[in-house]
Image (cartoon, rainbow, N blue to C red; front, side):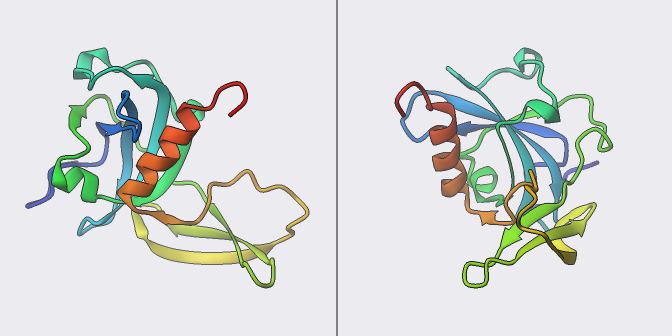
Length: 162
């Protein structure tokens, strides 16, 4: 996949997310992007890295060991706050777009939400599911880049007693 005009990233790119405590970075990979930008679907990995790695120094990771997956805004990439590291072997079938789970706050009803395979901004369907059965699906939220940084900092700094 090639970069689109005015958008500094493409699907398959690796990037670094600065942690909010100022102590390192999480690693991210863009798995899907809306055709006109703005919304991306990413996999994020720990443990925290001391610095932004070179492409040939990216640790071996797979979608299964992501600490967080999310639909999020691309502003961190656009502004350069999330440094783009580059691309390596990319197989979109290995880095799937999952279904998501959404729970209504008032009724408590839970839904499985599906997006177009190649467009994380375009919802295809939602189906009510039994809340009693655990979904294991990622949250159907759209995270701003600051929210992603906060979530990753909390996830990667969890330790005994936190």
